[in-house]
Image (cartoon, rainbow, N blue to C red; front, side, top):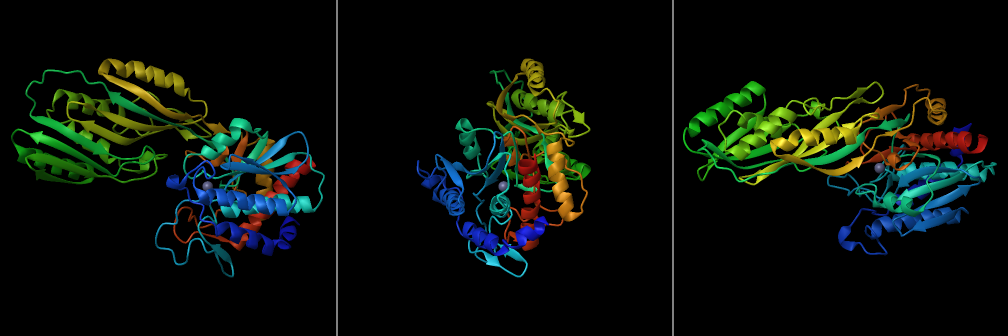
Length: 469
Ligand SMILES: [Zn+2]
């Protein structure tokens, strides 16, 4: 029945989606002004959503041109639908212009079709169709639209500074059936505090060490520069042997008397470091065999004692696991070291609901302080969780099942979705199990079937949650 309702709107959905996709809503910091907080493109896309909403008779409310909402419904409680209209840059290699949507027999191709303009229009039409049916709303609906999801979430930060938090909501910015839990995500630096020390004639001085640029990626390359007094060939031989034994790639070159060692690893997302190969930690592991200068020896020893071969926080004394959300994970994404100045480990730690992060960090801080290390906390986003058997989640998932017949259970992830901006909210679509995931890639597309089925699922879910209840 719901899918039939959507049928009458298919052409309109495609037209409005094409208009939105034609706007190159990529963040441009060099063009940012008060009028265009993250550049003109994202603002234009936001205004476009206001225009179609006003055309259809809805109220709108703008928040400093960086976010805003479309208002529908009636009642005391607010149901939030959290979308975003900014997109990542197109990148190279497209078969068509990424901002000139191509509509074929069965799909729409353009940047943003999946992430998140297609789902945004689908959710919008779910509200519009119900409104056209003149339903008796029991809740107010806020379709909240952000313009900075792909970068810093300045949009939602600003929005919720002044605007009401919905009691309930979903973000159509991930996958069906629903993502009902997301780990806590924290980043912190472990910093070596170097005191001037007398060196006792080390054989090797670590002049520099670099690995990784991003906290949320496993680094796939590490470079160490060593000043070697004698027996250069021995070190090179040992290094070759180390690479073979540990089945990692690498190379050594001598450059102006300095031995440069490189290890290549395998880059994966920092949410699951155990499936990657951390080039930095391997190279430090090799260096731990050498008679290094004191500062370097201390730095390398720290990696051995707390980080190497410890993807689940076990060496830091933070191993933690729950049935629902799995393991705590630790990714050492950035490693930097300078001769006699010491170094830093940049860590991305993700933890399930129930882990006492603050306590654990204080305990760890106290433990490593006597070793000459301190901690600087970056960001800590607490876990986001709604119980799977919460009636709200069950209603969403039932709408998905009614449409698809698929009884996959909702699940939790180590990453973060836009839904975590909501006090009580989950990520709900619009990717299906058989959708090709081309988010952030070239030739991004959404199938018409996916677009219309998602609209139908949102329609049923909203009817159950905001009209029947
Ligand atoms: Zn998105």
